[in-house]
Image (cartoon, rainbow, N blue to C red; front, side, top):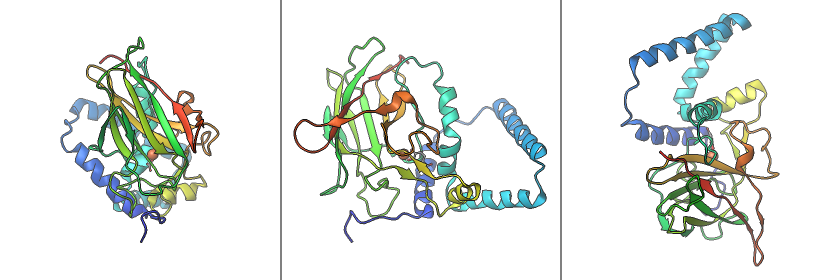
Length: 283
Ligand code: DHB
Ligand code: FE
């Protein structure tokens, strides 16, 4: 098997990996305050009761819902489902008072511990990695535009077939994942390839809901980023490509105007380049 063959992940493959990755991250999380659980759980249940009354849910529909919820868990798809349909509002609420770089959802496919580089990096990729070469660079600064030395820019992305390493079979572990630490000029430069749009797995519970409701399962092509620095609020973001498919109808509702890149052809050779700066709020 060649590594560039269509890895064709099933929902169960990517769901299991996303669930295991999330469980590892969550292991050391602090418990949520009981009064807060009371308030939020009560409000969430009341909102659901209102939906049932308003739409006069039948017993058949209630049982279909139960069966579907069970299947989301069996398919390991809770991280995928929640990050597509819920996370964007959590992100909106959590970053409302930021003045610097605009963020958006993290999604289920970040893995800590990617290969590290200083200033400039060619992301780990396969021989002949498909896709348009992309030079993506910029500066990390404070709110006044002063460069930040020692900032970390962590990038992860799908390949030109729309698949993420560690969540689709047959792709090397750290393919198209890497972290750059900025030097004294605050600059970073990634050499990578343009990702393809990403399709939510269609063969699992989330896909079943999407097709039962007559929705589509696509996210526009995007780069994922986490940018952080000492004494600064970290930003989790995604960057999209102007004119790309599904920019205007992202199933995850995570596109914002400030996150759309307009790459231009490189002056010599093949590929495109684009610059994007991150201004970090103080912690
Ligand atoms: C999902 C996948 C993504 O690549 C992303 O950016 C957001 C959500 C998902 O499958 O849930
Ligand atoms: Fe993604």
